[in-house]
Structure formats: structure tokens, C-alpha cells
Length: 248
Ligand code: FER
Image (cartoon, rainbow, N blue to C red; front, top):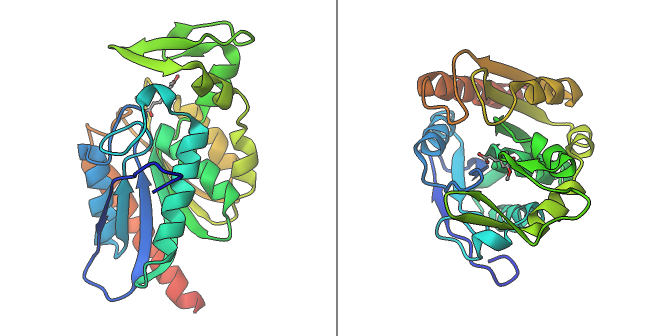
């Protein structure tokens, strides 16, 4: 639950008594059950991490209306799930992961809780949403950014409330990026025509410890070369566990 809103989540554990856990966020209009999110979770478990994927406000099986969703509500949901995960007694440390708008949200929540979040795995994070909201263009829909409309019809019968834009306009991801000291894996397809790959290059330069992997020919939904995405996640997370074991 987050402030009266029920959140639907799926927890899956590898064969281990105690292990780290990754909280996994989906993208705009997506859900925790999409194939590429399931594939990412599988790769995390193959590296020995438990996964907790959940539906965010106004999406999938969680509460809330799509029209009323904002990045603030998604951040609040993420912090609520983070606090719930901290109460699970098998969990040794918590990581955040997200795709697209969920990647942006994971990066923002990570910047808020750098003491609670060990590291980040961001897939095509939509760092440009705040910039687009300020410029007056979201998903091809143009509006006056200084006079935000009551609502905008963004795609096939989907209506976003004006507060989505008002919230997004005031978000500065650069601040959250600089506040996060932990390890970050950034994955982006170089054929992504929804979120510019260049934004991940910029973010990679700003993060303190970041490995950026551009997947050649891959799209926004990681559906052309899923095995490459899986291998990058599995190998990087497994290496992180090795590093940690050495530090102990
Ligand atoms: C936008 C660009 C990308 C936008 C949302 C997204 C609402 C998110 C995409 C995703 O999460 O897959 O302009 O506006």
C-alpha cells in the first residue's frame, strides 16, 4: 500500500537463503508482466538477485487512474516498495531497476535514497520527459508549456491529466544523478526512436560510477536482441557481487 493505493507486486527468489533484491519498475502504459521486463528479471535472478517487480500507480493491477498518474506518485510508490522490501528478512541490500519512465523514476528515487539503494540498472531511462514537458511536446502532442492544458490525449484513447505535465516540468534528473554514488548499469538500444540514446550517454558522463552499454540495432523495447540485454545484466550483476565479496 502507498497512501491508500494498493500496489500489486511479484516477488521471485533465486535458490539462496539470503540475497540482494532488485525492485523493478515498468514504463509508461506498460506493466510488470511485459516480456522484456520478465526477461530482465530472469537475468537478475540468474546473477543471484531476488526480483520484486510491481505495477505503478494507474497501471496494470495496481490502484489509481491512469489519467491521474504523475512522476511524483511513481516516486512515492517506489519509496513505499523500497521500505516494504527493507522489512523482508532475507534481503541483504536493495537495488533499483526501471525501463523508460520507470528508469527515470528509479534514477529519481535512487537520488533521494542513496543510503538505502545499493545500485541502479536503468534500461532506456526516459531522462527527456522533464525536458519535453518544459518544451511543450510529449509523445508528439504539442501544448503551451506555460499554460498547461487540463488534459492531453496522448495515444489510442489514453488521456493524461495536466498535473502529469506540471509535475514533470519541475523535475531535474541531473540533480538525482549527481546525488547517487553507487554503481549504475545503463542499457540503451541505439535504434531506440522513443527515448534518445544520447540522453544515456550524457547521464553516463554525470554518474559517479557508470557502465554504459549501447546495444547495436536494439529498439526501445529490447525485443530484437533480448539475449544481449540479459547477458549484460547477468554478467554485470554477477561481477558486482564478486566485487562486494572481495570488499567484505
Ligand atoms: C514521452 C516520451 C517517453 C512521454 C513518455 C515516455 C508522456 C515514456 C515512455 C516509456 O515509459 O516507455 O514524451 O510522455
